[in-house]
Image 1 (spheres, one colour):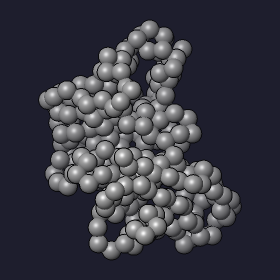
Image 2 (cartoon, each protein chain N blue to C red):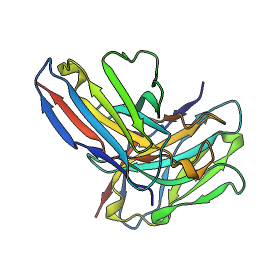
Image 3 (cartoon, rainbow over the protein chains, first blue to last red):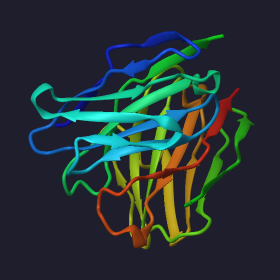
Image 4 (cartoon, chains in turn brown, red):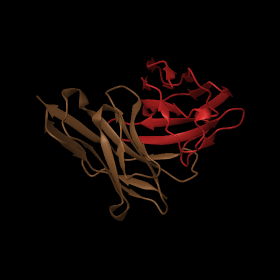
Length: 114
Length: 119
C-alpha cells in the first residue's frame, strides 16, 4: 500500500526567506505525486504535480518540487516566501492506474513571520 | 479552470437528523467524485468513491448505511449523513476529476468543504 510522510507538522519562516517542505512516499512503482495547499476552512488547491519526465516540477505561486527516486522524496520549495503563503500544505501520492485514489500526508502547517 | 462547488459550506444539525451535502462540477463532467473527511489538524481520509450511475465504493471502515452517496448525473454527487451523531462532526470535502482530462491520475479538483457540527 502507498503511504506519505510529512515529517514536519509545523514550520515557521520569515517573509522573504526560502522554504522547503519535506515529503517522503512509499510505493512500489513509479508514483504520481502532488502538492496541495489548504487555507483555513477551505478545500484544497493543486500547487503542482509529477507524473513523469523532468524531475524538477514548476507549479503555481512560485513553488517547485523535485522528485528524487533514490530518496523516495518529493520536497516542495519556494525561494522567497510571502505572508500569503501561510497555510496547510499536503503532499499526496496516487498509484499508477489507481483511478485517482490519493493518499495524503498529515500536512505541514506553514506560518510566515513578518 | 475546473471548479467544484460544494454546498452548504457549513451546517449545524441536531443529533438523530440527516444532512445532505452536495458536490457539483460547474464547468466539467465528472464520472467519478471522491468524498473525504478531515478531522481537525489532521489529513484527509478517503471515505468513498462516487461513480455516476452506479453504487459508490466505500473505504474500509466507512459505514455505507451511515454515509449515503448518490451520483445521479455527471455533475452532481451527494453525501447524506444519516442519523447524525456528535462524532460525525467533521469537515467533509469532495473532489472530482475532469472526464476530458483523460489520464487516470490527472489532478483532482476540490470543493471548499462542508463543516458539519452535530449537537
